[in-house]
Length: 357
Ligand SMILES: *Cc1c(COP(=O)(O)O)cnc(C)c1O
Image: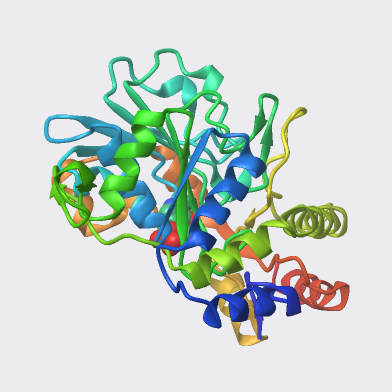
């Protein structure tokens, strides 16, 4: 079975994890701090706070940003449910901004004025142009689960050049992995402090009242990343440039070999941008038949995503009229793409796909 995405783990990764297992700290130790420093270096952000997973990172960002009951938080309907659920977790109301079919990202020019929060998803790795927002929402959170390694004209995704907070996921299908894991980057020391508190029970130590003393000052959770995972993260981060280059090369090869096929290729990457190519989403005419045929031939294609507003859990916030998203969803199909996808496997994907078009 060729999967749509998968991790790439080498001996360096295994050695990094083993070293932590032989050491003194399995969690809340130096490997987490080192990983956060590495994330700052990779993104250019002033602060990085590691989380247990990308969903926890989004929850932390929504809470640290001060979003809550009475606030309206918009995101892309063409995303994973966590992009909208982070609003629900803090008691805010989720809503959606329809996509631009040319980018498959939420259309920044359609973001309404006076919005409390925006969760901008960089779909498939292509960054949303946050400079095109007509009116700045109070809190801008980037959902960069697909986009570590992506670049904008203003630098790496994660530098928060046009946002308050940027969230990553390090699930094995994402551009780099810590098994489960996530992080939030920000340039605000105050937001970073709130994120750290939120990650660990809202606890604040007060050594002036005794070495043991701490107070719980607001609602928090146990959303910590372990040192085992963080060590894997630092090791993976050292190889991220290579992973991204390999994904781009495979994506370019798909574009070339499918140029004359009866399908729509993924959005072009505008000048000044680089996509980390988490996904290679094509649009086909008969998606059901194409999906079933590829699966039957051992090609593990996937659909990203069942639009969030289609899920019953979102019904209380609707109804939603999002025709561009609904139209794009009809044909979407993500072809296998990961750093060590071989040319032979890619040729097989293309041959089976062509036979079904
Ligand atoms: C994967 C993903 C998440 C959630 O990340 P987890 O680490 O799986 O919790 C959130 N948003 C998007 C767009 C994702 O693709």
